[in-house]
Length: 166
Image (cartoon, rainbow, N blue to C red; front, side):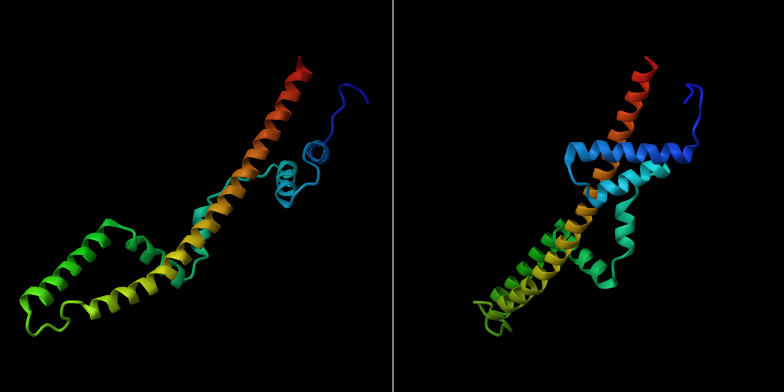
């Protein structure tokens, strides 16, 4: 082949894909599905970075969004302050104001029941929210890996071009 010969972009992309695949297989062994996706994006000149959070949020059901809001409120200062105020008012009303005819006298059995029910409902809601946050973080980490691998391969390719020019 002559030094001034040209090849089409499609063949160049195919050659780059094969070369990158060979280099990655030499370095890390067997290629994962993520690695294959990155190699495919190199060949087709695709952009890999995307907004994972908005894609993830669009797939949530009403119940999942509701549990996320409940968990977010349950972990806020608003909740802690309002909950403390309700407890204080409950104790003052039943312990001091209605000392003789209180609807929940001193050991506050009804208050204990309400708090237990609240904890029994709130714990699974928080766990569901944490599981979704973990899934969102996993998607974000996979996306970061793909973007970083593609950037590393592109930089390596640029270095090879510079070495060839020098």
